[in-house]
Amino acid sequence: MSLSEATSIFANVSVIAGIVFGLLQLRQVARQRQEEMVLRAFTPFTDAAFSRAFWTVMTWKYTTLEQLEREGTIEDQVALDVVAMQFEMMGMLYHRGLARLELLDDLLAESALMTWNRIAPIVYGYRAKYGVAN
Image: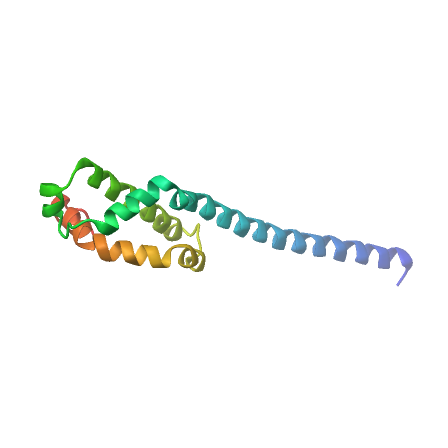
């Protein structure tokens, strides 16, 4: 094998190795961007307005949709919307493959379970009343 052949083979191997390395880097960058998007979407959870809405929902006395509609205020409805939509957005990110379940679990597991246990009967009531699929 001549020096020019060896140089040519080395050049081809170098190009292939560069392409493989570049693809691995792109994969890592894509995953990092997904995690950054989830963390940006998580930011409202740390906001005082969300915290007020969350604790409004967690401490109210309503156990059914009918009771909420009969006795609740517009502020109660707004609190429910704020809290439910934030968790729904995180679920959508997972459903679309934009967020890993492990990351969402690390960020939200306890508060998501607490919230769902509190609002599930009301959500089921909304779904039944407005014909929304479960």
